[in-house]
Image 1: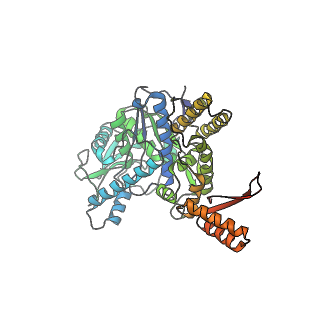
Image 2 (image 1 turned 45 degrees about the vertical axis):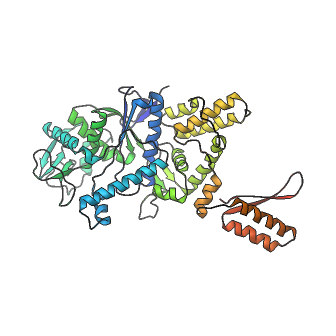
Image 3 (image 1 turned 30 degrees about the vertical axis):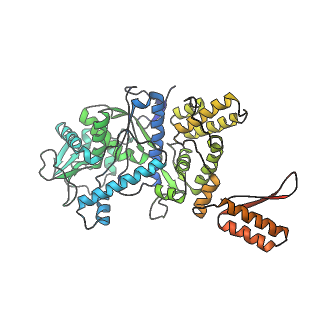
Length: 481
């Protein structure tokens, strides 16, 4: 089987050839832990979880290392800590904010069916590696000290801009005029800066007397180096990180180690909009993962809705799309729910595996799942081939991170989101249906309508139909959508 991936660096799709098939290495930029993760943050978590699962399937679980960092030093974290814990020293408040937010992030992405990465390094645990990289860059003539700052000298790297496909001339022309006076060039970026009073601070590199803290970009270069080496296989993240974050990572790492590449393959998921507009708090369409889960949307629905769009394409996140994903997932669940056996084989449907091996083509993978269900319908329950196909279906769902969908009920899910959590006393509903039937039999239409309306107010929809054999009226019920 050939795994083909699109590489942002080369703008081509090519066969993936790991540097060492026994040690496949992937780094993905993780969260800055200052608030609940929003639905846009969910996209890279889900996309690269699918890739992690696929790599483990192809090369073996023990031969794939997935690193996703935690950024726990940042101006936004400082601001949140000062706001939420004004009576605490800032560093103590920062510790409370980052611990709480990291736990919330894990709870949310766990609910989305994401496996934990092999390693989740925290930035503050890698200050030593950051300072070592900075000193390498200064010694090599790629960085300089100015007014207690250390800055990367962008013109010292002629290839700068290769990942984002931007030339130095274009970037310099677009740089702000009011740049810091200590910069040699407008494009130079901060590797280390002095800390303000009360902020997190460490002994500075390069003989700088003032305590300071790292710039954002150097953090990922240092953590990737520590856990994956100077060069590794795949680096991932959102398309918004291509420039400047990933471009600056390339510059730092390649210049520090005199290497041609930091990662062999660069992968980026597309932008996310909400109901056709850019997500923002000012527009009132800022949605967190936690909010969707608390409304009643199961994690597998959110994951499925996300993966129905190819990862490199922009996605329009809509309520209608989640509802449609819920109903579509019900059709799959009808074949997997309630099965009380583990798959006999570990085979994934070949067509699903082929789709995922073509640059994570998840929409094609789901289309192939529906083809598989169509094939299942042509076999009897006792047919061994049906058992084999069921195994393939369940194993394919697991590879996609969706699971067996036991107890999945689309009507109940949609009704819960629409009406709030509904507790159904089935005996009571049956008694009310019987009372309504009696009212109808005595032509007490007002009472019959009252019972129907009371049930509707509780989120229960009644359906009246004639029995095709007896002609008698039969009433059934379901959770209203």
